[in-house]
Length: 152
Image (cartoon, rainbow, N blue to C red; front, side, top):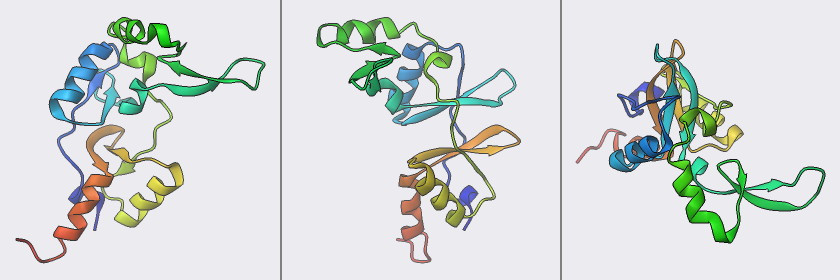
């Protein structure tokens, strides 16, 4: 089976200059966990996932001490709500992941699974000529169980 038989399509995208408020609204409205970020010609520039809206551990410069960062800033208990409020006007390009992995729509499920395992990712854009044509997630793999010849 090929990726194009399992992927969700058409894909919803955002532009790099869209605000995070806009991005969050689209993700919530459509109940999706990632959005490809594209240029004006529709070419993939990066991806925003739910992970970009949560804190990550980061090391202080010249230190071994870790602390949480959110939207590229050090996070303190007292300012968490303010950080989310101020992030509303940030642009997608400021937090998008530009080192994303992707699959081609004609890749096999075997290739897809290997890429997911090797890169520890749960969702990936499906590209054709550098443009997103779909999204494939672990959830889409459930189709392999129900589409195996016995549909109800």
